[in-house]
Length: 179
Image 1 (cartoon, one colour):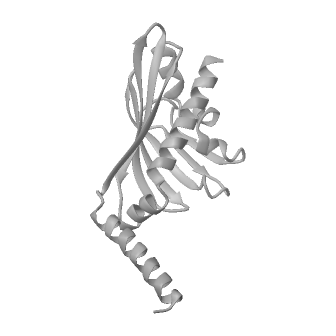
Image 2 (cartoon, rainbow, N blue to C red):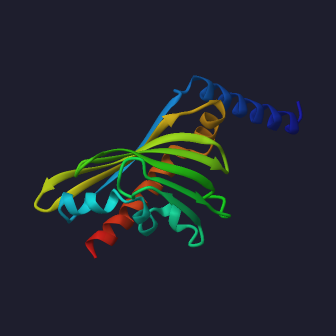
Image 3 (cartoon, rainbow, N blue to C red):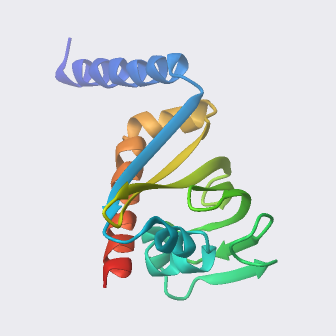
């Protein structure tokens, strides 16, 4: 057996392993990160409930200063609609709607990604009073994955990348609010 045959067998085994892992992986996924901000919960919540403020801390929005945005409704209220479109592939095109608000506690969103891939997800930002004018902010994304999304999650270690991006965004939020 030649070296080329051995290399092809190894590549085939690796691809087969990836396919098997994707086939048995859960359809559900969830990623989250948190940060503690030295501000009272009411002040932090009053900032994060507005989708337009994400342009000041959300890593993905900040990747393209020329992102095209469309807003409908009253920001910071249930039903507020935000759409974005960018020529930067990492930003892409999508829509976000505030679907639930619990004052000083939680904002829930529905997300629809259109480009560079199609997907739907949920997201929430939870604020928790830690006392001493400190607020813990937890940002999460969750949803269902089809087989192709499972492959992407595994091959690109996407949950780790997304968690890192969430943590970076929360670090930006902390810097903005503690300034």
